[in-house]
Length: 175
Image (cartoon, rainbow, N blue to C red; front, side, top):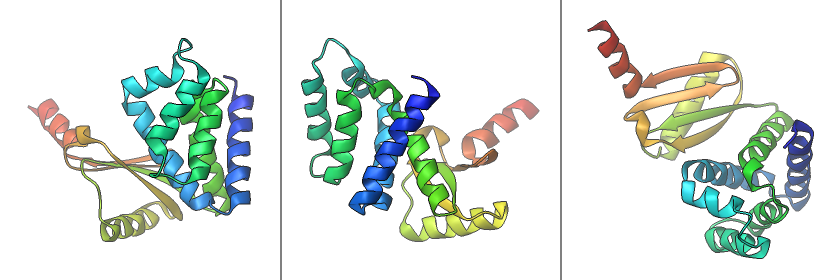
């Protein structure tokens, strides 16, 4: 899909969530859904298969998110899937997250960790990223077992890689 369409969808989703008064919660839920979508071949295939009727794909969304996410989030994802744009969900959602962060004068900080972080760990990590980058950040944590340990943080064009995987790769190259 063209950048204009992705931008249009993200703007529409942003405005709907803002009008509903649930922007922060919807933004977070959409971000987590996009990461799940990217990591699951089965989900991605089910939502993008043109052989499956749109109504069935939408019911998959409702089954997955119903009760676990706000009704606004469920309806927004269902709308995008129903319009045949499921392939572009991650791009649409990433633009929405960037738009929501920008509206709050924040930079998106995507952090990948091997395990889920506690609220205290997230707060300390956010403070460390603010200190390291000099920017106020909207912290988005993604659990990624391939990290093994440590964190990989991306703030704008800056990547801070403190992962065990990178350290192991560095040791391999030295040997």
